[in-house]
Image (cartoon, rainbow over all chains, first blue to last red):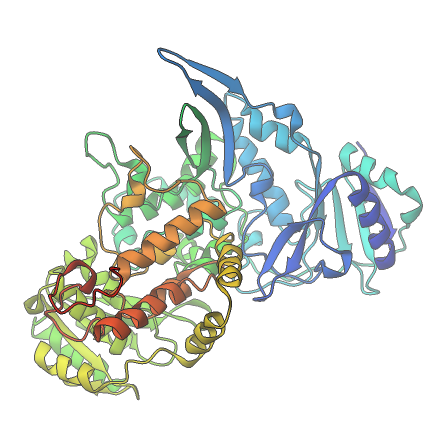
Length: 336
Length: 267
């Protein structure tokens, strides 16, 4: 579809939000009591932030929730009966104000969840999701989208992309049919776009991801991994705040004769992650797990999924208790 | 700082230790743990107000132990953790050299564990003022309000286990939450499962926690989970007159029977 650029005034955004909230769940960023930014369903418009640099958690939960029920079962004497989860009941959701890194992350997740078998839960959630992106007009030292092939104003993954103008109003770029449908709810709010430049954050490129990918091919046994991961404590903070980490665990939970099977987030940083029933663990120590994290995102994924497993949001580095700064490590990896 | 660097260099040069666990300047103006094995790198060591992580955690980490004898930069919380780890036989005094740091940031001469014990004995073991303030505020709430507060806080938990992984006393190689046949607590992250995890964690640390607050600092979503263990540490002190990490021969109060223990809970 041909994309169009329109002007939407700050006060019209409130009307658009009200129109959307009437018919759909809208997931938007607000500032929490402790000053962290978190996304909430249908907050008051006045509480929504348009100035945040990054939320603590990503918005991958909209397509890959912390916990996803897969089946329900009842155990009988010699057999079990199974009830499938009805994915058609997954509701329409509008993600409001996602930064370009987060919007682009859905494509990365798709390359994992729909690699061969199309994951029905993920696919249905993504199908029901409309993304209203918000280009970044500011950034911090942890942002590195420009090093991984994106930009503070990338339109990838957004259905509508809002960009701030000097006047405080917004340019709305309508990019897809889904975006068109949202704009169609209140067509009167979208005006002709004047010839005015948008505000865009200046994120300096720190490394070239293609160089990193090339270097990683021969780096499996390099001393870099041990030297740069001694401080890693092996928690899952990086993976859980990451918009593209997709590993999950599957568990059965029963109460009496009834139970359910669900999947929940998991992390390759955990020692248990690769522990075999035999007791053997192919990734025995933390350096091997840290190497896996980098290798998976920057070598295996470009190789097998034809997509990079990182969008440069910097959350893993902001959230790490011991400063395992990934952009710093990738920059260093370029020259090993 | 210069005396710390000089001491670290000396220990590495005369091969008294194979690695120094300390702090270095990290990215974006923060400090982070450093592992110095080459005397030339001792210059990287720093010590200032930003150096608050409890480094005792690394004394039980496989790849760090692999270096051999370890020197460790230790302010009071790290010293107390070392005492607990020695008491629980996870660390052996002869395998470590402590580079003590006083409350004003100067290097202390810690010739042996006895000297460290003496130093801890004279130190102020109180909780940081801002934690005391919050604990006092929570103590004023009714049980229902307290429950609501924690329900609210713990609903944010994503079960990344940064609280567990950052704790020097959570050194088990296989945590009970990792057993799923049967499950001890729900593996998934929901409010109920999160509460069970944090209560279990706090109980496992009661009488062992030295109130460094590392778990709360490590939490990516700012849950003040350290208040749970800190409060239990205060309760242990109140009932048993014991501060964890003040001796290298501590027995855990909650797993040791003493004929003089209070039995007021038995009707």
